[in-house]
Length: 122
Image 1 (tube, one colour):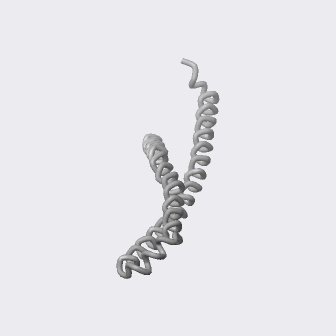
Image 2 (cartoon, one colour):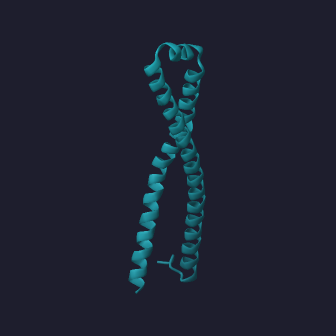
Image 3 (cartoon, rainbow, N blue to C red):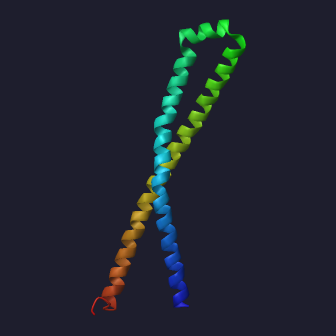
């Protein structure tokens, strides 16, 4: 039974290490959402409110409607992406804090067990 428990603990450590490795990728995605989504929102709003765009709507009926729909889709999608990126960033920050706490507790426990059973003496 102790060998089985050791396998479970080792598997959990490997799983946590893999998640920690993926954290960097998820953080990159989160940063891209926080940077690129506001840029897309700003550019779309600028185009929609620009006087030349209003002239385009007056002269180019179907094309202007299609362009307006496209810019609206960009606005909505970018808004969703921005909210998701902020939530992901908060989640990753929380995960990182808990992971650091876990590592500290694991090191303290290892140190306590080593000193209690004099495992450091060879």
